[in-house]
Image 1 (cartoon, one colour):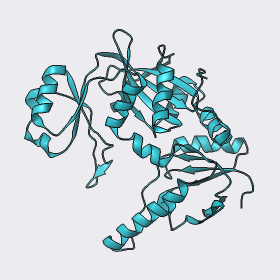
Image 2 (tube, one colour):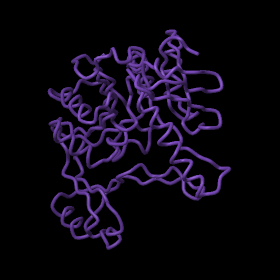
Image 3 (cartoon, one colour):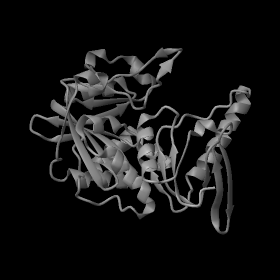
Image 4 (cartoon, helix red, strand yellow):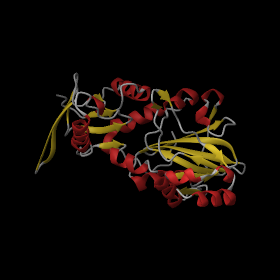
Length: 326
């Protein structure tokens, strides 16, 4: 068993970002226990005891054992879901729920652990209406937005605030029936709205007359801003057309970013902004599990080192107030 404080990295097997961070931590001599929650219970085991002294116990992989009282930080990336293929459907649903509330509850309750980010806080922050409201409260500019299942409300909003974009409210499935599927951000007109809108909730948002985008990575107290020029409505649709430059945010943005994260009790956030023709930054969204590692290769920013710093320091970090960007 590890006798010194470990870093737990919870993610899927194919995660190059986690690979880079783990390599950096290994180079520093920091013990790391990596696992995917989807490995439970086949190759991942937990034995946690809760007494008057609190939570204690172990978490075991084929090559590592972590003492749950000696976890300095937990890096929660993008683990796969629990699966129990050997069980019939009803029993499997019960087993998945037990694993989620059992193993998930233990991982969410580690003593003296820095969460980057806490899985419950990630869940809270993934609700886009909550994120838009939090951005307004933090003092960020937010395009007029409508969440609705009413066709007439959608038409009226588009006529009042056009041009308007349709955006998915959730992360769409990667595939359906064996085929790759996605829901793209797209222009929408009032004439395109029909009664099918009443089938579920939809997000409509005024389109910012933008000249560029910005991806902002916040890791504890450190803020890294990268301008992305593409000429695309959604730059994520074609990475070959992107050019990058490191920029400084306008006055007040840093403070607003930290205020936003504090509302959700997050340590990390990947923010997207649109820059309009007057230089104003408009908040689009914050992904509490967003990607960032490719920006290091494009810009030279020390992002991997910054994340490793945060995880190595653990709770001794003071992540939410600083003016440094490097």
